[in-house]
Length: 551
Image 1 (cartoon, rainbow, N blue to C red):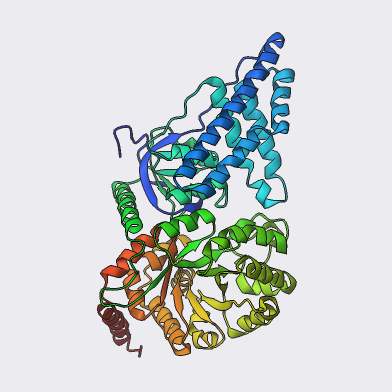
Image 2 (cartoon, rainbow, N blue to C red):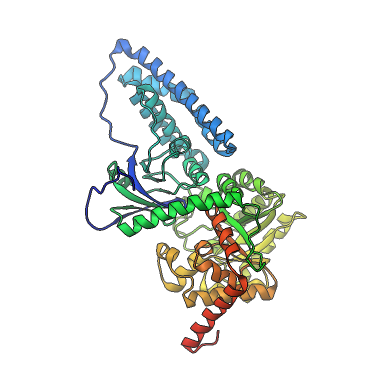
């Protein structure tokens, strides 16, 4: 925990709930980056021209810092992250931002640092209000540039803190620069598709965003745990939670080193049974990390994440522009793109009030679904493209999608699969499999629905609960009978207890978070397929015998 860590309060744990932006857990002292600042004295009128010049020099210095950070990223073969950071250079030199800074100094007498922060915050607020979700996401980047320039104006040095970074928002360069010693990140604002989150995922830093103002009440040096798997920040963590988090961080470090060293070694059990390990990803940064750890492709690309703030259905060109940079990295490899899984806790503004979810919601807007399919096929050209249909409950939904897909595909080819994530789908797995090219089991939702847990509980609920296991087994048998591959893309695929049982039941593929690819590949190499096959059969038989049912 480090000598600087301390408990500032006593009593039970307090969990602040946000959204997972990068997986993993970490414990440490809070390093609060957004401390309160008092207003500075007004600059006298005769000194304001020089103060404006000082502000311009600070922006130039901030731009130079960003260029240095980008160059270092390129030396580390992280060109995608470098490209993201370099956008900040253009922002620092933006004439509108410069003019706004000068006006604040000339008319209000603000000091350079204060004017830089205020101008950046104003510009960020304008960007955040735009209907274009891509531009809106740059708000945090602009705010970060302004605060970096303000630090340059005051001569403040950037520190490389050791602990959990707590802030309102962060820009991509902040994450890249401060991550040298940071063990995790927790933001009051931000989003899972913001540039800072993308960089955090590429670095393997646990990150939670959207925690709200409560995160900024944490005191500097307070002991906290950030859980990027469940999307929570825990104040006053108990000793067991801290121990688990520290162990997780050490395991991730060792596992990554091993994964990179053994990335070309096949994921094959000790007795020669081959398992394909794929990545769950949404960004080029995640794909870069997955490649480093030996992923053979993508088993789940969540297409909806970049459009959660969209004011209307995104058009063909907009979707291609977002998907192509990711899919272009998968030439010749498996690229499984899930159709927009809108609904529930992933409802964009234009769909608020919608009752349906997943494929049912998409089928209510067939023209937009056709556009979505066409964009995926265009962006995925050159890959081994697979299109995954979410929340399937029957074969009729697959038939409808296939009819729309046929004229779009032409001679390029794309497989169509069903996501089995409800009890209804698992019970109809044979019927669904007869119309699918592959099946993918979403264990998070399946466990949640079967056991009646909320989404957070379902992440840690035992997939090996016999009620869940039977449905998984039925799905796998249906896929085997139809001679199509079956994949698991939920949390269970990277759970050390559940994964061997899933392999024993006969899954062909495991799709996991990019940062966990190497660890799962190593686990596969350590198991004996014949042994886990017998153990999985024993679990089913034992439970069936105890309940008097045939399994």
